[in-house]
Amino acid sequence: MPIKSIKSKILFLLLSLSVLMVLTMALLMKFGVDKGFSKYREGLEQELNESMVRSLEAHYAEQLSWQEFLNDSKNWHKLIFKSATETIPNSKRQKPRKRPYKPFQKNKLERPRKQKKQKRKRSDRGLEARRNGKLAGAIPVYTLFNDEQNVVIGPSFWNDENDTKLPLKHDGQVVGYLAYATAHLPGRPQEKKFNESILKILWIIAGVMIIMALLITLPVAKYFTRPIRVLNQATRQAAAGDYSARTKIKRNDELGQLGKNFNLLTQTLESNAAIQKKMMADISHELRTPVAVLLAQIEALQDGIHEADEKNLNMLHDQTNALRHLINDLHQLSVTDLGSMQYQMQAVDLNQIIFAVVDGQQLLAERQQINLSLQLSDKPMLVLGDCNRLNQLFTNIINNAINYTDMPGQIVISSHLDIKAQQVEISIKDSAPGLLPHEMQQMFDRLYRQEGSRSKKLGGSGLGLAIAKNIVEAHYGQIMAEASDLGGVCLTVRIPKHV
Image (cartoon, rainbow, N blue to C red):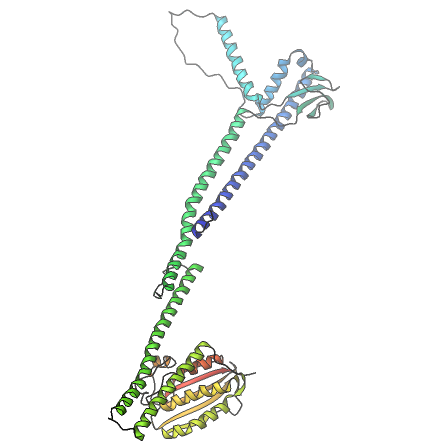
């Protein structure tokens, strides 16, 4: 069955890694213990062999022959066990425990002294048997050869390839050989128990660590999947149209950044939705006014209240013309918003476009008693742009300045080249009235018209500056508004210079 939950995947991945690491560590520790114990046994075996060589060489120096081992094999075993007790730890003969003193009881017959000696011999033999049994698994099988390579005592033969032969010397001469099997011995029962106990402890530690890994992995998986669940739930809300959904992920990692970006996205969607609703309401309001006036005038003409004279027909024409301008502006705005407006880019001199626009607006400015003055640079202000769209851009801006400047007023249009930024800068300054800072930020919003001091000229659609902003951005430029030193508003257009 495939694992679909991220939490389950993280849990399975972390738990698998933890189990793999724990088992690897346990096996490495077991290998290390076995290796160390083998080295310990090899060292102990080597020490025992050296002790046997010293004991045999001392025996030969004292007896000058190996005859004693031929006569009685017990002497051979005693020498082996003596060397073993001197070499192997915890193998020395223990002292017999002292029995508590008991006073002599007259009503019991005293046992013969001979029986006590036999009992003491039996206890000594039992202790010796127990001691020999403990050492039996740790002592190699030794064989003694004389200097002529003949067996003195032991089960091996000289030609046995599995035996290692150590020379026995006296006064610099080889007097015999001590042979023992090179294969590792099975070890004493205590050694096997020790090895088994170490292995058991290792598996217990591994099991405890796996359980701890499971207990740690669960909260880790929850830590990483909790913000994902929150984001998933908020995304479903936003997909259903609830743009007020926000995530409260207070983290500094990538998931926290994702939560912040999601909040920014929903905030933008909520703002756009509010703007869209407002724009639809404004558009319906803008369309309702001229339509209502037209309908009222037509009904008045139909009812005979007004006559179809030149005055009323001119009024109907003005309202129809205003409605046509509004519809055209809405169309232009929708085209620029969608990016479907066609731009034929070529090298254009902005000074020439401004000359043409000012010449076309000069008559309207004189009617409004507005003085249009130019302070253009002597050098050509070349940009890569569409001549018709740039003409529309500056027509909207200059026409807007003329309509919203008190008479008599002044408008100054200047241009210069920002060499550092490699941009052509066009400034359109007008005289009073001015705007507040927050009103300047709203100038480029759709259908925005300030109904205060700058609204003495009614009838504008409030879309001209919004269209101008789209045209500037299509030319990779910027447009901004600030207070003018003439008392009104200064609009600045920056477009990259054409190389």
